[in-house]
Length: 416
Image (tube, rainbow, N blue to C red):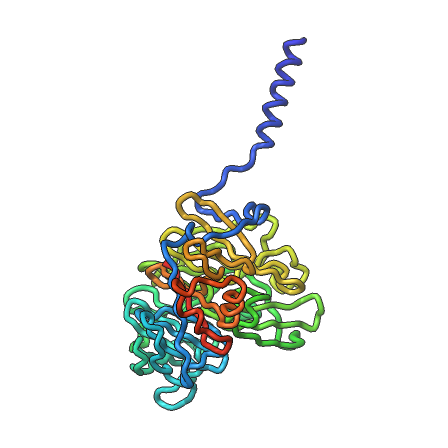
């Protein structure tokens, strides 16, 4: 009897121990919930070898004002503004080169200063007015306009574009209010050949008669509240039902490249996919745990604890991702970094930035990345002058800082 009781207690102990053991972590998952419980600072030396600071030249023709994007264009830097300008600067000298194109329906005009860049060919693309893309080279010279041969004249619903492989381009249909059955259109410039994919997952939709108001925000002034992903633009929609609404980030935040690969992640879907002309292949998944936001609840505002991932960048060793909690009522933006080698995840509020422990300069954050894994960010001149007044940097080391005033153009930050 004693022996039976002993084995019974022993078995119960093993059962309790086995129940207490956490589930093993998956290799193809980014565990964000755990990182949120132990937020920490981010140091540049953990992710980059060097950082370059480039004060953009300020002339009468090159006043930047409020920035909506900053992109690497080969040996150039392309900055777009709230004033719908696209300004080109030399990456090495910081000198202003020229304005790239302009808004207009003339032969060299485009519909919006919201460019994307094909690093492989050195081509800058802008959306046109009539289901077309307007192309410039990275010296700012006009190349041509190409028609988007989208099916059933759906090109006006395409939110963002990029390249996939060879000469294939892809347009993404942002499912803003859940009523868009289309997913992607793949096409080759100069041909009528297209391949349009249809969404195969259910998402709730709203009718236009359910929308109470629409607010459009853009520019660097809203990044403090929503993070760098909001700089190109943010659409906030309130519905007639007060507890329902949605927020849409208008930039190409969910399409990016590394080497020859094209990646994609859609809001309310926690999976990162690799895109090829043949379709989507799951690559890695964000494990948000209790912060997961179900796609079926995408229009519900009572999501103060849910995570909304807003933008993803990548280099050879790390995946950087921006996200927000409390997006409707009390937004708090964060930046997370996933180490692809040891699978470690670190998270910090974007207000803290990434500490420059390499040079001792202002904490900042990258906004965009290119196929080589280089990243680029921006620091407003006003922030620079305040930091200099407080920290009194060494003029011998930072001679250009003593010449910057609050009215000057911003400083571009390049992470390598």
